[in-house]
Image (cartoon, rainbow, N blue to C red; front, top):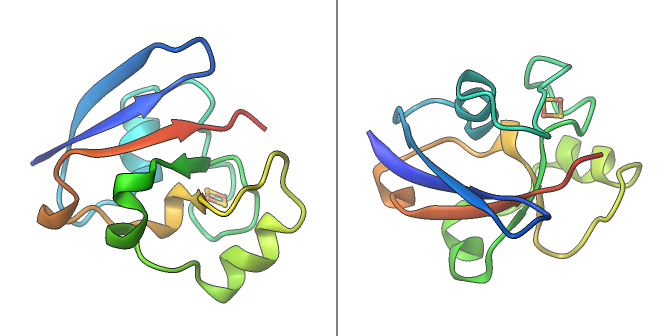
Length: 104
Ligand code: FES
């Protein structure tokens, strides 16, 4: 298990324990994180798991997949740090990961 932190527009945060191997979206939905819904089941087809990865974690979370890139073109409030949480797989290296929820 590793710790991941979700930040919200009101400045609050919530840190939860995440199972290695799970998608970050699955962790969020399992923990009822507001603003992350995972409507497409993690297939990069809905953007209801859109997050902004905080600067310290951008390299560790890797590059967007082609499907993710395409989906983000239709999403709201897209930035260079935007990722779909369903395309981020939790690993030991992501212990302490911090992202901000983008409520589409
Ligand atoms: S769950 Fe649909 S794009 Fe991530």
